[in-house]
Image 1 (tube, rainbow, N blue to C red):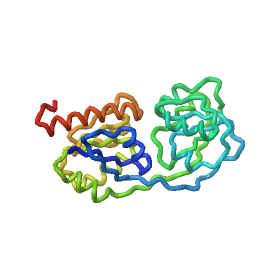
Image 2: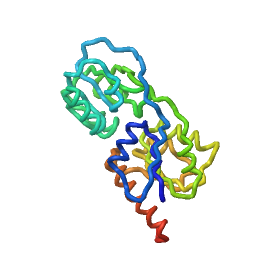
Image 3: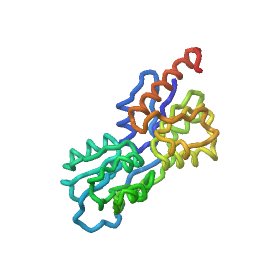
Image 4: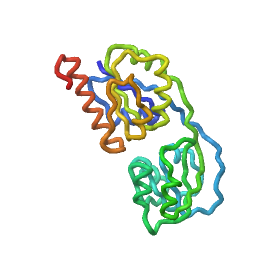
Length: 238
């Protein structure tokens, strides 16, 4: 039976598996990142608007909420609305957020973020005349793969591996390089930046999702799951 190895933080991995559970495939959750609170320098208030790029940022944020928010990710936008933010723009990634920044949006904003982020929002928004203050409210601590994850990686069944961030991909590859896995690994990266971080000869396949969101990741993973079923049944896998 093929195995889906989820390396996102525990809650995010459980949520993704709940949304994309596939019959005939086993799930192993082994986070390579642990989200912990981080006391960063808090920009002086009042703020005119915030940028939110993850649900984890909202989980660790204790500032004002009744203001405009410019958001990366549909789930982050949903959580932001629940907390009282006025979500003015939702984009699939940081680059798209910069490209779609409205001309009438505030020119001074605060990015509520983790210690590590993908993309340079401040540089991208500077082209629109926007000044971005950063408030780091959480850290992403590296974690070792679990014994169960290593058992899967050193087995014979295909391992389907979704990758969601450059940092988690980098941490994963660093752990695999000294101990190359025996199982065939079929990886799916949510973006080109994640794929770049995951470049390794240890993966039998590394594809990029058609769009940088969970829905596109799910579509790619369904395809790989079907390939795994055909492989188990002796059918073609090309």
